[in-house]
Amino acid sequence: GQNIDQPTEMTATEGAIVQINCTYQTSGFNGLFWYQQHAGEAPTFLSYNVLDGLEEKGRFSSFLSRSKGYSYLLLKELQMKDSASYLCAVLDSNYQLIWGAGTKLIIKP
Amino acid sequence: GAVVSQHPSWVICKSGTSVKIECRSLDFQATTMFWYRQFPKQSLMLMATSNEGSKATYEQGVEKDKFLINHASLTLSTLTVTSAHPEDSSFYICSARDPGTGYQPQHFGDGTRLSIL
Image (cartoon, rainbow over all chains, first blue to last red):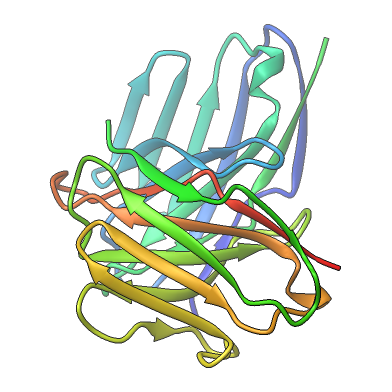
């Protein structure tokens, strides 16, 4: 079966750095997405990785290792507004998005 | 960037009412749109894939006669919850795949919060 695992909840301090991990086992791979979802709102697109390595976009970076079936989202200089759920999703061989359950990130002052 | 508009954002109605939710891609043509449901503190659950000009593909366990999907144009898909009951109360979100971008990310509407009394 297809499976995406990410921690249920993480806590970090304002101004710090946090890494949210995602491991996946899917039938085929056409890329991995990270989305941010604030409570009561729809997800917003953060990043896309299809090749191994690190993609940096401002305070957010996303890393992919296809051989390990592993990705992480790195958030730097955390702000209170970063408190949200972060969803990892993989595009499988049929171009269907397989969603992880999401990681709830709590930022403390 | 790509924008997906979803309407209405909030619906409160009596049990037995049918509710229609619209999803529009505003600046791109979407041959494929997706309908999700999300219960509180749970992840997104794909209900169906809506294909322009053809029948929607429903996920296992989703009643196609209860959740009617129409994708009549390249910019509009609608989800109708027929004879809604309190257990249908949920957050419904649509998304559209942007074919103009190589990796085709899904862009989401703002969601519709449905409350059935």
